[in-house]
Structure formats: structure tokens, C-alpha cells
Amino acid sequence: MPDYTAPLRDMAFAITELSGLDEIAALPGYEDASPDLVTAVLEEAGKLGAEVLAPLNVVGDRTGCRLENGVVKTPDGFAEAYARFVEGGWNAVPFEPEHGGQGLPWLVATAVAEIWHSANMSFGLCPLLTQGAVEALTRHGSEELKALYLDKLVSGEWTGTMNLTEPQAGTDLAAIRTKAVPDGERWRLSGQKIFITYGDHDMAENIVHLVLARTPDAPPGVKGISLFVVPKFLVNTDGSLGMRNDARCIALEHKLGIHGSPTAVMAYGENEGAIGFLVGEENRGLEYMFTMMNNARLNVGLQGVSIAERAYQAARDYAKERVQGRGLTIVHHADVRRMLMSMKAQTEAARALTYYAAAAIDRAKSHPEPEARALWQATADLLIPVVKAWSTDIGIDVASTGIQVHGGMGYIEETGVAQYLRDARITAIYEGTNGIQAADLVGRKLLRDQGRTARRLLTEMRGTATALAGKDGDLAVIRDALSQGLDDLQQATEWLLAPHDDDPEAAAAGATPYLRLWGIVTGGWLMARAALAAEKHLAAGEDSFLRTKIVTARFFAEHLLPQTGGLLASATQGSGSIMALHEDQF
Image (cartoon, rainbow, N blue to C red):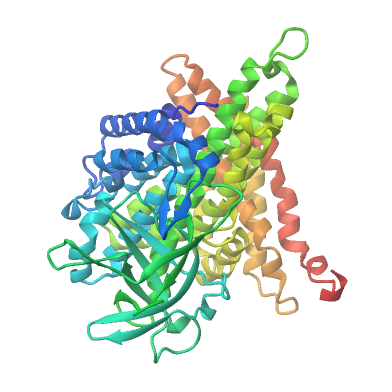
């Protein structure tokens, strides 16, 4: 089976050179995030990923989870691996020390999480949801809820879930029917939720569900949704576990991939009613849940990066070993080189963008100037749908290309690489489909501030093109391609910001190519910055790693950035044919 080794130098380069670790470490509360500490953290995470989690990846895929007598059993080895994960303090990396967290930046936590998802995406989903629950309770929970739940959630001793989807509702949260009725200071919930990741399992002693439900007098639609904490086991005032709650997994979904991750159908209140506790105020549940959803969307984008990295490593290693024709390994064939370069360049660009967005979250959280915090929050808001959708599209594409590199052996399950494509496929669907991310980018993030954040980021990216002025060779090629991409993105942005009263579907029809345009241009921008940083460091002496950065950035410029012209046309000119047919003509 393919092995996995965390690409520590690539990760460190993206953290320091492209995301500004030195600036992050200068922010209040992040002073301990020195390069040496970050290197040590990544090295230890890499060991856990390679030695403990990666060997369980195929185990989880082949055996899956099972529901026995109302109890969900994870694959052999998962519970023991999770115990080591908790013992190492890995769940606590980005959280506040007052609740047992390590207080490190989300930039570092994001890099660490890349390792979990590359090594074993099914396993990594559990802390992904728990960390989102911590974020939601930290920002919106009462002091009583924080005192009861945060320490255990931060440590990972208890895990968290998010419960949105219902059988009849899907993405339309306005249609949810789960009810919550008051019972003194607590509530009784009844209803059913589907697609609940780690809704039940045997890796932790308690599971803390965050559940969307309607109260009796709630207004219709999304404005009438409230958020509740519903624990698997009730928690006594001293923190000990009490009685079993009326919340149970009644079925497990049978899925294309991520077999090691239990996806539960959850029933609340089949007997006396599941006891829940209101988070914040009534009817603001969707607002609160978006805290958790945005955290999850960034991390799902990261899953795209992680699967791409794992697939690339497997394809690279196979190409160097597989002999075909004249005694040469297939890595000598031009088309195999093309595929490997495409996999490598897209993975590095998606990693750079995801880390950059995580660093924007750190700056939005901790910058001492309120105006700067607001600007960085707007940047993070703009980029998160791009990270989620573009990076997961890349994960799927790279995983598929990895099968192609393997040829017929890639289509055989025993080689292991088909799993990467099966696992990756869900990432474009859950936490809001990629089409929803595109609609969010255009309908909310772009139009909400009349394009100010988009234009500001475009200006920053043009600064990199200016810094490339006067360069020759590889950097000149990168500069020209980036400049053209920026022009195309600017033109598409201005077109979408203009009124389209004669074609109300125009913006929606162009949203997906517009998001891809953002992804390719911002990815190309960060690859250009990588090339500039590599050139600067090469002045101190030849280094194969740095030279590789420049060549990879040129490949991205020559083979991927030219797509912007087609995406511009699709974003601005394609609505007529998209909406032309009557529904009966499909």
C-alpha cells in the first residue's frame, strides 16, 4: 500500500514565506509561535500521521463502521489511535489556554490538520467537527455551557457534531422540522437528522451534539431556527457524566468513500424527549451555526489539499518504480511528467491558499487594530468559499489523475489509490455543495460590500506582479501569466458588480466559473510569491528545493493560469444558454 510522509518542508515554506508566520507570531497571544516551535509541532504531527493514522486508512476503508445493538463500532485501531491523539494534546492546538488549549494560531492548526486528513481522512473528520463545536460554543455559549463542556471538547476527550440536515430538508434549512419545547431551564427535542458525521462512535466517552431545531413560537423559515447542545450523556454540575440522553443513532449510511467515518441517522426524542440546552438566544441558531460551518468549510477545503497530497505522493512513487518500455520507469514519459506536474502544482497552490486564509482568520482574531481586524475578517469571508470549493475540486481532480498515472493498476482496489478518489468525492458536496459556495461568493461576499474586499485583494495581488517587473526567464513568464489572470478576474468582477436587470439569472449562472477564476488567480498569485521567495533565498546558494519551487510556479503559470480567459467568458457570457431550455426539454 502507498505510504504517506508529511511534506514538512513544503508546509513550512507555505507557512513562513506565503502566510507570514513572523507577522502572526507578533500578534497578541501568539508570541510562542516561533519557527522552531512550529517545526517541532509539525515533525511530531508527521510522526503520528505516518506511523499511527496512515496504516489505519485502508483498514477503515475495507472494514468500515458497524451499528451493533444500538452502538456504533469504529474500525479496528481507530479508538486506540484516537486515545493517542488526545494524549498528545493535538485537538487543543488552536484553542485558548483557559480551557486547556495550546493557544497556537489557526495557521499552525491548519497545517497540523492537513497531516491528519492526508494520513486518514476518515479519522480526521472527528476532530474537524469537534473543533467547530468548540468555536461555536466559545463564541455563542453561556458561561454555564462553557464551564460544562469546553474543557473536555478542547482536549478531545469528548467529541462534537453538527446536526443540520433532515430527510425532507437537505440544504433547505428553512424546511427543518425538529422541535424543541421548553422544560424548565432546559428543552426537550424531537426529530430526525441525517448525514451526521461521527454522530455516534466508540472513541470518546461523550458526544456533544449541536442541533438546529424550532421552538413552539418560532417564526417560519430560517429566522425561526434555534441552536441547542444535546449531549449523548447528560453532564452533572461537577462535570461527571449522568444519564443517557434520548438521542440515538438508528442507522449508518452506506457511502462511496470515507468508510472509516460513521455517518449517522440520528433520532432525537423517540421516548421522553432529548434534553437540550439553548445556545445564545432563540431564533438565532443559524447565525450561530455558521460559526461552526465556516470553520468546517475551511477544513473541508483543507481535505482537498490533503487528499491531493496523498494521491500525488502515491503517483510520484509509482512512476519512479514502474518500468515500462526500454527498461525505463514511466516517470521518464512526457505525459506522465505532465500529470505529475499538474498534481504537484495544483496541490501546492491549494495549500498556499488554504494556509493564507487560515492566517487571515488569525489576523482577524488577534490584530490589535479594530480596522485591521475588520479588513482581515472580510478577506477571510471572501476566501473561505473559494478555499472550500476550489481546493476540493482540485482534490478530486488530482486523485483522479493519480489513478491515471497508475494506469490499469490504479483501477484495482488493492493498490489503494482508488480510495483517494472515493474519499475525495464527498468534499465537493458536504458543508455546502460547491455550487452553494459559488452562490455565496457572488451573492453575499462580493455584492455585500459592493466589491470593496475583492478590489482590495486584487490590488494586493497586482503588487506581486509589479514586484516581478524587470525579471527575466521563469519569473517573466510567471509575471505575464499572472497579469493576464488578474485582468480577467478584474473584468469578471466588475461585470458581476454591474446591474443586470435585463438578466436576473446572469450572476447566478456565472457564479461557479467566477469562483474557479478566483481560485486559479489567487493560487497563481501565491505561486508567484513562492517563486519570488525562492529566488531571494537562492541568492544564498543553490538549493534543489527552491529551484523546484520556481519551476512548479512556472508550470502553474503556463498550464493552469491560461484557463482564466475561458472562465471569464463562461462567467460573463454563458447565462443565456444555461437557462434557455424549458424544464421539459431536459
